[in-house]
Length: 434
Ligand code: FAD
Image (cartoon, rainbow, N blue to C red; front, side):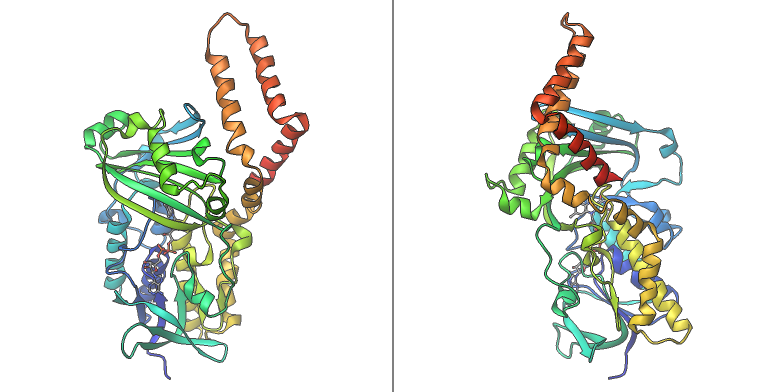
């Protein structure tokens, strides 16, 4: 069958939109297929938007994109049952345009991004699921959709279909996704008057705060929590590896963890009075570097969550999604311009560009992180408690001299982890973050 389109993009999340936009802007004939009622209707994110990746695609996005607040303060908290030890970084440099990070509401943002894709000339069809790829030998030549006469042909198909990566799995391009490579996250959006948010977080009209959290809040499982300020709402969420939920001795559910987080004495006052507007659960591919499958072949490429492109340490996903989408599109554009076929040998250029970019460099940097944290739950249980007790001891004025306090603190670390344990944990941390 002759190709009806230069490219078909499956999915209208950040990766699919970045890809379809870049292709259409270059004058290619693009079909984008989205199973949701509208782009964003199925999508879940915290959500922090990192400007840099979007700027490279739509430089003037700030003119009309639906942005909530720009982030001026980053907090990282380690929590035990009733306290937190944390760092706060706030800078007036973050308060000068062009801003570097924003909170967004994904349903609104995806809709906006999609309108740009259509303005650029791509054809978008919603409420349509791609069931599988159409193959001619080992060449992908099109997609089969759940519609009558639903076969569509194109020179190349870009799979931007999210974390489940259903199409690539069905086609045998990679195996089943392991439950130790995905996190299950839940989040709530809590409505709160703008003034209350400003007072509670000590911020101005458009300024925002991010709180990232680790520690006992995940019940010994590998995971993190977060709290973000939107214009008139807060987003609070928590996620842990799916394999940890399955293996959890006390069978904790994600919802129970979120409820517990909301009741934590350091969190409860910040969210008090918040009225729940939305509840969502979603998987996040957090397997990192070693979990990224082969992402190109004859007539196909994989972008975004479908390829496992998430930096869990820095909670970056949407920017990797947009960057991979853009790089895949640029590979197609260059091949078309050179009159080359969409063969595996030609599309390999996509992987070469990925390797040169921050995407693979960052995933490589944290390549051992998933394994280290999976096998060492003391980082989520023992250490938060020890650090909290140490801070408590040092800051309590009770007539005990500071040298004695230091000795007691060191002894509590040694009793809990032993000297070799402490040295071993330091090495593990170095391996995870090197
Ligand atoms: P998706 O956004 O999942 O989009 C995939 C699209 O494909 C969907 O619209 C879906 O409906 C469609 N689709 C799937 N299958 C088919 C099919 N067969 N046919 C047609 N359409 C199909 N990232 C950040 O950068 N910052 C954050 O703060 C952040 N927080 C997060 C918090 C949570 C709770 C979660 C779950 C994720 C978070 N992420 C964050 C990660 C980020 O959301 C993802 O990395 C990003 O959405 C990936 O974009 P994508 O386009 O690859 O996939």
